Image 1 (tube, helix red, strand yellow):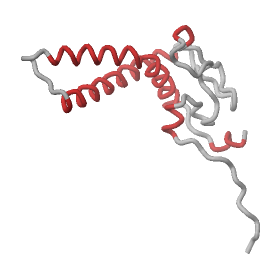
Image 2 (cartoon, one colour; image 1 turned 135 degrees about the vertical axis):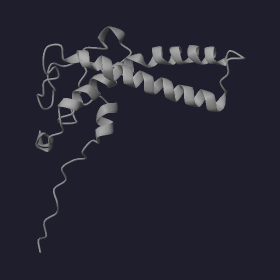
Image 3 (cartoon, rainbow, N blue to C red; image 1 turned 30 degrees about the horizontal axis):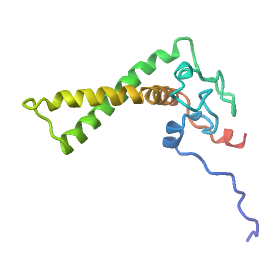
Amino acid sequence: MSNTKPVYQGKKNSYLSTLLFNKCPRCRKGELFETKNPYRLGKVFNMHKKCPKCGQPTELEPGFWYGTGYVSYVLCVAFSTINLAWYWLFIGLSWRDNSIFYWLGINTFLLTVTMPVLIRLSRTLYLSFFVYYDEDTEKL
């Protein structure tokens, strides 16, 4: 029997927290974006060329980020579907009282307000499709 204690190696971030906090998918520690605030609209797309922690390039090839349009579209449709579900459950939906148009207005407003967050989420998610977590980078 050994009396040595296991060495604490730190808490590994989960995949979900990596996506939500825009961390590098390879090391799950480095920031992908230059600013943390997505509502600085002039800098919403500004990303580090490489992860500050592990050096993983963020743009894998020229034109890489065109694919995020598809991911962003899926996120917006999912967001709108969730908005439709809660609106239908709590307020109701009908053509007779024009409540569908109220939902459209509310949904448009909410999509506009959350678009910077959805843009960053789509980039992080798209990069994580191609770059996988590497446990060896945790030692960095």
